[in-house]
Length: 123
Image (tube, rainbow, N blue to C red):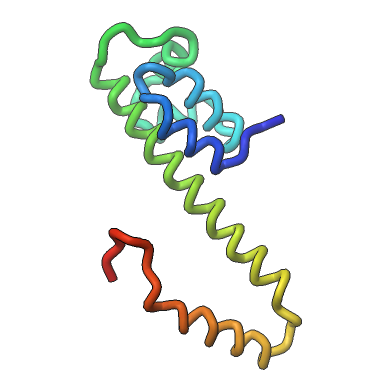
């Protein structure tokens, strides 16, 4: 069973990229459907670098590996944001009755929450 995007982010946080880059990269490929060449282009590395990282744990840190690790970190963050956005839209769809009046009421409730911010977030 494929991992959810949130599980992918969890693994990205739990494992350091250099220690478990192969697993993280495989998870990203599974979730996004991207192939090695597409990831290489996005990460700014060669396809051979992606292939190597999928096969063996790096013994030393190189610039291409660092770029690939940055891509893994950034992609995990994007996937998490998309997952959260999807959850918000699904919650809205569950409660909205389809009328303009109800949509306005839901917007007012959401706007009333504007003052609530997770600790550490600035307005």
